[in-house]
Image (cartoon, rainbow, N blue to C red):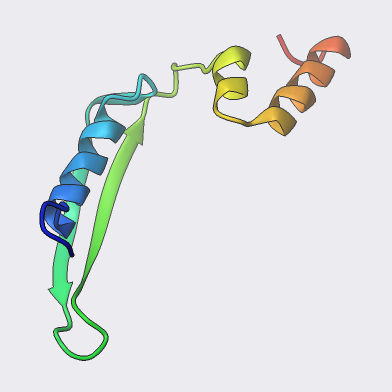
Length: 88
């Protein structure tokens, strides 16, 4: 890692904060289960981690949000289902 670049633990923390901020994640729904730092040899050091995320089943993503995320195929399929009267 270069000077000023975030370390593995800082990146894991940033990921947890980003996940927790998503509207589809339940409050207090992100938990780090395990973090293990391994290796220090030729291949360098690495960190393995596990995160548990609990989604809110009532949360719905709009077609606009899906489109902004680049899920154009999903948007097209959902629109097709709407046209056929299968989806609300």
